[in-house]
Length: 75
Image 1 (cartoon, helix red, strand yellow):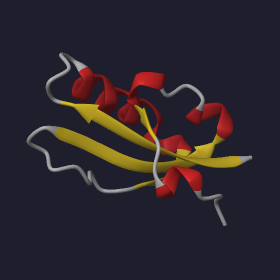
Image 2 (tube, rainbow, N blue to C red; image 1 turned 45 degrees about the horizontal axis):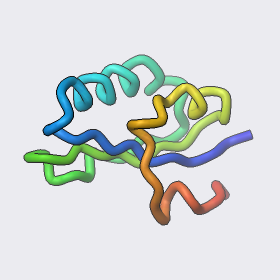
Image 3 (cartoon, helix red, strand yellow; image 1 turned 180 degrees about the vertical axis):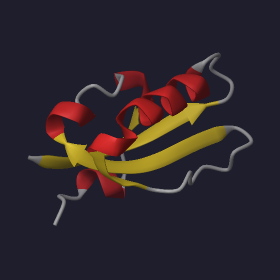
């Protein structure tokens, strides 16, 4: 089953952006959708993603963000 999620990493939280980028590198080929980075890039890095629930469930909770994308069921 496919699900959606949003990733949000804050520059002020030490290591968080690197952790988010590492997770994306690790799973990018297994995801069916990864947006361009849509945060400002100076303080927030964020992406919308879609893929198998088993993969999305490995996203660390502190990198997960709510929003319209994540709340909408995949087509």
